[in-house]
Length: 396
Image (tube, rainbow, N blue to C red):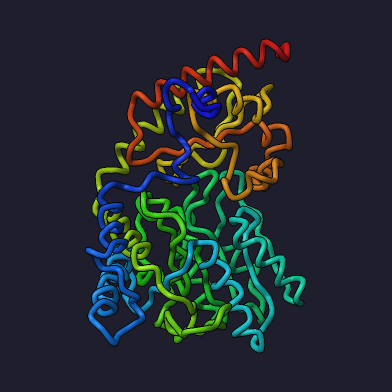
């Protein structure tokens, strides 16, 4: 027996970390596999001199149409990227630099993903001014806050649709209307957590730029898209150059199997209309069980959130210790997977007004397509037992 096998638990832990990463849906994997072997569609979609490339290009365009249909966009507005992080960077840097002569002021929120906050901080180092909006105690950003923050030289506003840690949903249509009245400010929305969790209509909402991710909806990791509106003749400065693919905004060979996987995943997510109520019932059952433990606080608003996310702080319990105590039975996280290496209290929870101790004692539970009622029962029992033991040790 190998050392790894000796350390492995007898049974896999219940998986409640779907916001961080998800298993690829078997139907998605099957579509991807068709583009990986000699018997399938393995050509370079950028090569139109032969049938192999043409067939691959057809698959890519079909996937583009699938993503567009699921997100309420036009196929020509879909720009493939390596994921939402690249899409966010292209949106923030691309818009800021293209419109720099019109102004160098950006508006965003303290609760944005690091893939938006870090580019904004880099813009500050390059001479831009950035206003960071503070959410209310439930995590909401009022459109009036955006209105008040706009200045004459504001060229970009970036507000997340669904927060990746607490699940709060922002009113992006109202914020888009504020930006439209301003006339100069373009609105970018990080919607990596939105697809399959709440309705998305890029065109109807009046958003200018929207970042999407495949792996949040049981698609492959390493692929995403940036929606670039054609309504306002929006322009971006490219970040990388080469073959001129993706309207010159994202040069590089398009990975056929990846984008095909994303297209299939988005089509499946858009069709799963019954998923929300089912997951909401499981989330409510989970919260009721955790709340019964006592001295437990729910982070973020109970209303106007997606059902897939629940963030909870446990008083008199240190988060990392709790995570270690339950990891053999339940796979959860203390915050965003992209910030886990920092090992510091969640800046999202701190922005909501939680003190450092409570921010450190939080767990994020995220449910998905494969979550079952049995998973919820296992999670509640494991967390309750671990909290009781840790509080007993601490004398709390």
